[in-house]
Image (tube, rainbow over all chains, first blue to last red; front, top):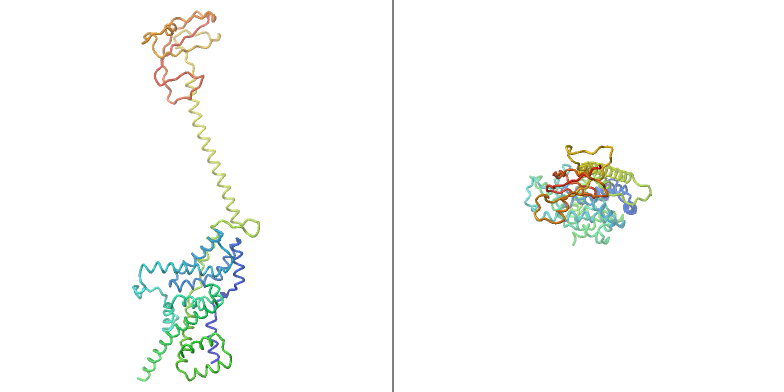
Amino acid sequence: MIHERDTIIESSESAPAGSRGNAAEDAALFARFVAGDDDALVTFFDRHNHRIFLYCLHLVRTRERAEDHAQEMWERVIRMRDERRLTAANPLGLAVTIARNLCLDALRRDRGEIALEDIPESAHPIERIPELGHLEELVIQALEHLPLDQREVLVLSAYSGYRYDEIAEILGEPYGAIRTRAWRARAHLGRIVAAMVGISEDAERSGGER
Amino acid sequence: MRRTSDEHLIERYLSGEMSGAEEEEFFARVAVDSNLRQMLKAYRIMESALRTHRDAISPEHSTSRRRLVLALAARAPQTAPDSRPSTYARMTQRAGITRWITLGIVAAALSAVTVLVNGDDARRSTTTARRPITAPSTTAQPPREQPLPAPSFEPVTAPAEAPSIPTPRRARRSEPDVTPSTNLTTTAASVERSVERPAISAPRSDTALPVRRDTIRMRMRIALPE
């Protein structure tokens, strides 16, 4: 039983390899970039681009668009530096905020074009992952239907690998509020999955009795 | 209410916030409570799904990285921490100097061509305008060794023989001009010739003969020495 617990903790706490950032190092890197050192931004990109891309992916749902928005975000950062509108304070918060605004703008534009329900199943933008089982796939789909404030905290935590205190700094909100939102998101998702597990267990039981 | 407390328990358990005694109590409940057991299983599936999905997304962003490097290179260099200009800055500066040199050469070549063309035209026009009008070869030519006095030209706007309004001045001009001081006795035949306007108009100058668009009849008197 102890072994099982360790596995769960590891899965919830683990982050993408090499992505565990250090706020002080990030601030120093960004300060170098603001002072004119372009290589510092490339290093900063290597540390955080995939995590920001994952965040964008769960907002806009397709890899191509997520990459485009992440790319646009970096170009905006460079432009802000050129226009002397950049400070070294909370660089990760700045990057995530820009990416978030770009994704939300794109979603707002899409809303006037076509409803998600009108898209046929074959052309559904959610990517199918062959490694996922049936229940796991339902979890990912349920994640996409969470409220935005809960979803982004869960994505920043479970996908991007940021700690709650880092997320609180990124989003500029109190640590307790982030913690509560994360708990609500997990509980919301957990209830959906629990219902599905119950249904599947009932189905297995009824199949066995026959 | 009970469900919420169960979720809190699972969250605390997953985040490792439980003490040893709390953990023992939690697992004792999981063993007898099917709902709590089911919820714990759901959380495990959820965590597994998120992890598998996260790991399945390729972290390959080489294209984006290349674009970022290009975007950085395409912009003007910022104030670098060290005073030595970067390679990009040196290349840009060199390219700027080369561009200005090329522009200068092209401008000089254009100016030279313009001067050559204009100079040729001007020379041609000046030659035409300054060419002295001499008497026809049929008239008596003065010997070469004797210097000729400067010929005097008097432009006449209308034929002398048919003046529309005779004036005393014109009547005087039609008379032979005998100047005692010059001691000239011979008066060359009056020559009337027409001077056509050259194709390219020459710039006006004091030394040039008056050239008009219409035909000008001129009477030329050449005073020959005795």
